[in-house]
Image (cartoon, helix red, strand yellow):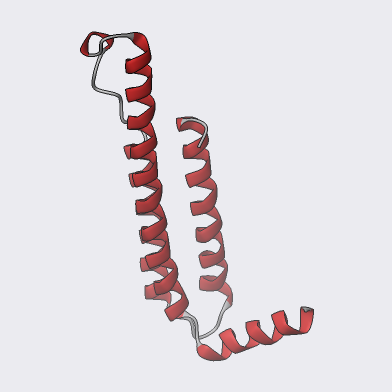
Length: 122
């Protein structure tokens, strides 16, 4: 990600898209496990909140802790790179878990209909 703002927008967009699909299924698919879908949406919203909260981290060392400005800039850049990779990985894992819960809530006959529709388009 380019910066914290871009990362937060990315997390919001991905999470909103997932929740939008889950809500559409919740209201429009007969026989879907509504409790499981609610749990999946809660997982997605929790992942969004955690990722946005963790993105507010600050570099805890000042310039005086380093021999020169170049070393400081290098250390700061590496710190943020590691932090955002970890936050992104955690967000992805939580989102994957929510999607597995969501997919388990959809009846098999609906899944088969989706597969037929996709196969017909190709």
